[in-house]
Length: 150
Image 1 (cartoon, rainbow, N blue to C red):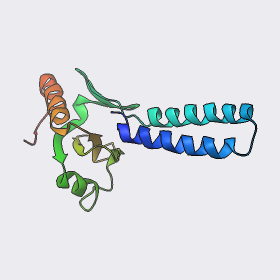
Image 2: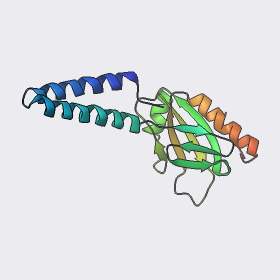
Image 3: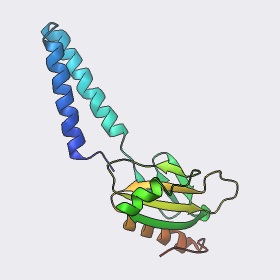
Image 4: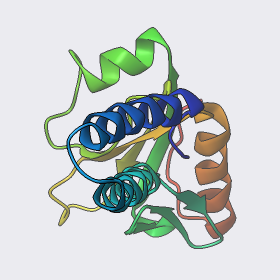
């Protein structure tokens, strides 16, 4: 899940403003070098902010973090106001967060691992129902889910 197009547009406007300001005070070659650095740096930041979420036969992978199906108890989708509540006033202080402000949905994956200090994972997604269903399907195929929330 990458940054929305309007973040890229705002980044381009910011880069153009910085480049214009620098060009007013330094020679063209220095401004060109600065411009290339600003554009590449901004693009790297936006691409680096991308959150890759994947569900395969054995695990849920979010960014660099992997959660095996045998440690998952529940997967529940939240959208709109419910997503805001689950990450705000009703938030679990022990939750492992993988959230992005531009994604409207949240999936709460409740853990079944007493050794883990996190009670659940909160994952941003634009498609919370589909992700929760994919996690449930992965777990049910493995036969590891004891209970699932509808």
